[in-house]
Length: 164
Ligand SMILES: C[S@@+](CC[C@H](N)C(=O)[O-])C[C@H]1O[C@@H](n2cnc3c(N)ncnc32)[C@H](O)[C@@H]1O
Image (tube, rainbow, N blue to C red; front, side, top):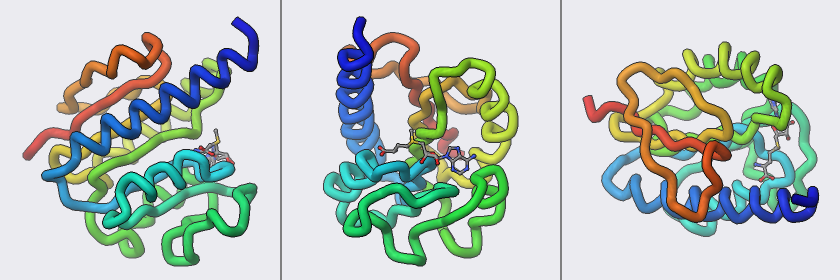
């Protein structure tokens, strides 16, 4: 598969998954945490889809177009390994949805990220909240959900936090 086809497949899969996850959080209060604002493609889709939800976007650089940037309160700049652990006072409620988009095509990098990220996820999630992630994570007590059939196998993963 060409790089172009692979990129198109990735974006389609993200769109399908985000829309699916949005349909699963109707009864789960709380904000959305977007890990990896990047050029704000998925952030912009999330805010179009869920206009009534607060969305906090995390990144350590700004590369998104100015008109797509969250306001200063909702843009959490810095290394996610540090900011996710300490964002509670700013974010307030636990998240209904977390979208982890800081993975890469490099399995070693993903394994290293998984090791520090996974323990930081449960303290930030609301009961019944949904995690979309580009690499698997060990999340104790979480249910691994089936992804929609349009999403290529093992490309993205969905988890639901215990309802409490
Ligand atoms: C694949 S891009 C995100 C794409 C974005 N979701 C979009 O749709 O445009 C990953 C982003 O995560 C950020 N990132 C990766 N690891 C990070 C870390 N440990 N701390 C903060 N930001 C990180 C990178 O700077 C990059 O902008």
